Structures are given as C-alpha cells and as structure tokens.
Length: 199
Figure (spheres, helix red, strand yellow):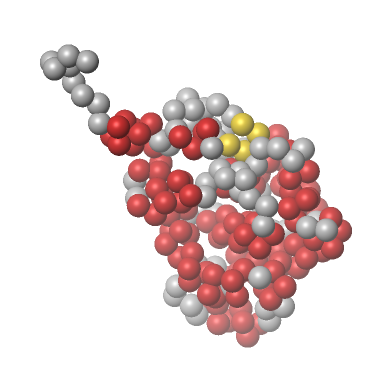
C-alpha cells in the first residue's frame, strides 16, 4: 500500500459489514453478537425466547430487550413448570408490574404456552428435540445480501406455526415463529457480509 492510498480502519469495516439493524443500539449489538442466530438447544432458554417473541408482537424487539431482565424476574426465570401454574392472583400482579409489557392477552398466552410446552416436552422428551426436528437437526443457512432479502415468514415458519397452534400455543403466528427460528439459530439470516453468517 502506498502512502497516498486511504487506509481502512478494520473496526469501521467490520461495523459496516454487520447486519444493519444491530448498529442502532448497544443492546441490539450485544444481542446480535452473542445470541441471535446461534443454535440454541436449552429448553428453558427456548421457552424464554418463544414467550418474548410473543410479547414483542406489535412492538419493537428493542422494547422487549430493555425489559428482558424484568421479564425474567416476573416470570420466575422462565421456568415453564412455574409459569404453567400461574393463577389469577399472579396474572393481576403481572398486570400491575410496570417493568414488563402489561398486556392481558399476552400474559394469559404465556401461561397457556407454558402448559402446552410441558405437554410437548413429555411427548418428545424435550422441546429442543421437537423444534429441531423441523430442520432435520441442522440450521438452515440462508445467504441474504441485504435486509430486503430476509423474509418475514417462510414455508418452514408456516409449518411450525400451524403445528404449535394445533397443540394449543397462542401468539405463534408464522411471522412470530420465523423471528423465533432466527433468534434460536434454526435459521441463519445474518447477511453474508456479517461475521455472524460464518459463525
């Protein structure tokens, strides 16, 4: 390189290459770099993501991330066994908790989903086994060049949504399911320019 050529700052180049949505807020960046698209196999963590994706419906994911620790406190660490047993008194307490998203339908859905989650675990041995059966145990690696190439739903999310709904889950429409599949790493939708695309 000659002295009159512009020098490229490595960190600036990397910043420009990562998924554009991740650079708008430090919480997004942390979530993108450490979690989003990483294959997830822990049932409790999968339950947490499923519930949070449902809570996000109609809102921004950043809103959910900002309230995540409050959700963990309010929902007993997202232990499905505990959430499945929440009663009306607990629902009332949650509706009065300013640290979470206080939506009665979403809170009741979380309890129903915990109950359906436990039934699924009993049938399959784990929610992980059930979920990853939809992709044959291996992540779907897409190759989006830009955000415009990333779909909001696919045939895969349609199938998952239909099956979860049949099993009694709520707030599991195809768009929510696709976001869940992306978040849990069953689908890798990092842009091809992003380090996250290559793991």
